[in-house]
Length: 105
Image 1 (spheres, helix red, strand yellow):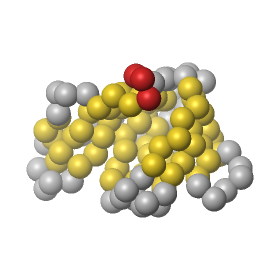
Image 2 (spheres, helix red, strand yellow; image 1 turned 135 degrees about the horizontal axis):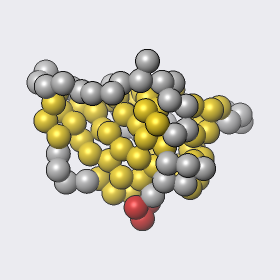
Image 3 (cartoon, one colour; image 1 turned 60 degrees about the vertical axis):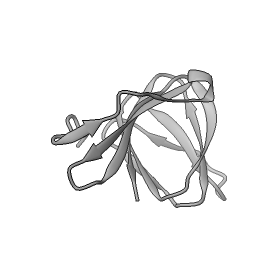
Image 4 (cartoon, helix red, strand yellow; image 1 turned 45 degrees about the vertical axis):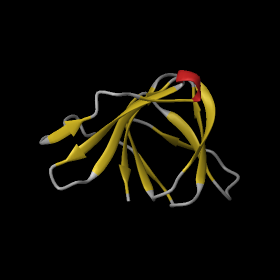
């Protein structure tokens, strides 16, 4: 099931803009201090580096991704998630806007 709404959250109004605007997100902080980001990746092929472990949840569109150390591309669409280890990276290919929630840690 795709997350449609995050209750009890504080949303940063300052956008996080990466890769010359190909990825734009906003930080969301829950009442318990948990941080997430909600954003969109526009059509492109990018490499993201992680500090903490991340779970990428697709809320719209779709992507293909490849985790560091692997050779195969996997698909992720609405309602699907993929996990990325901390201190790692992943490549992402997007043909149409990919809407996501990034769950940290």
